[in-house]
Image (cartoon, rainbow, N blue to C red; front, top):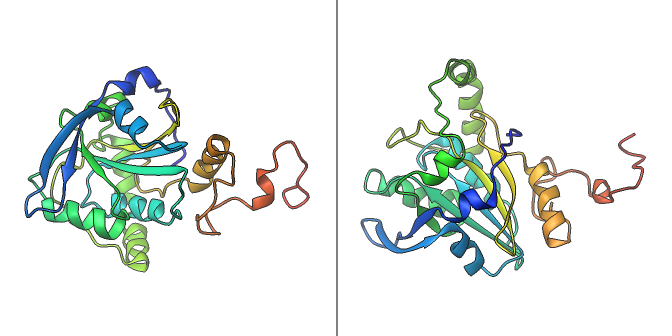
Length: 224
């Protein structure tokens, strides 16, 4: 998941989202706010926003689980965004509790954020070939990680990751690259730049870049 797209703070700042109450039998919409307001309300040095394609999808659950491997940091907030409720509320609750560390989730009812990210459908020849060609490999990977999912809900428009700084400005976008895991090393570098500490904190060793690689401007003997 290394693909990026030029998206500006101005584009995403006015996206309107609903907060959600996932404690009831049926997921309920609550307050409404812009994405910028929500990010600023976190009062953190960095905020990661995960726009999920479909919370019941095993690939989205894999991404949520990767983010959940980040240790809790007083400097970083993590939020989720979904497209719909009332279609698979049980799957949404499972996603939040078992794969997303119980972090807050918001509703993008008009798919504003997804449209800004390109309204990218999986129903393109190249994307479908990639998905179908990797089905067996994906099945093994999900089995090894003990990730289960379903096929309920809208899952054709892809999402991605957005990272904001403490001022509410968008500093990084990582678009979903279907079949691929999140690029956690890339995210670690961005978080280090924002919060001024090792952004790989809490990222599994196999996914995070070596600690010495964060010494920018220095020649690394292990990488040369």
